[in-house]
Length: 70
Image (cartoon, rainbow, N blue to C red; front, side, top):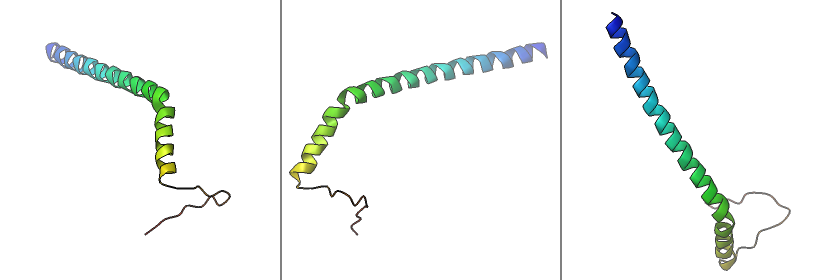
């Protein structure tokens, strides 16, 4: 009985360690993505603004409504 309990606890400890490692990797990837978006965000926004301006879109002021085309 004691050996069974020891094996059970050892297995849970090893699985928990694997989950912590995956969580740390996920946090690291999230931090990298946030840093990249913070650095490149304004440049990407300018690119999309230039594309929209090139298409001739002029935003309307004062309305605030959403225009849906079906």
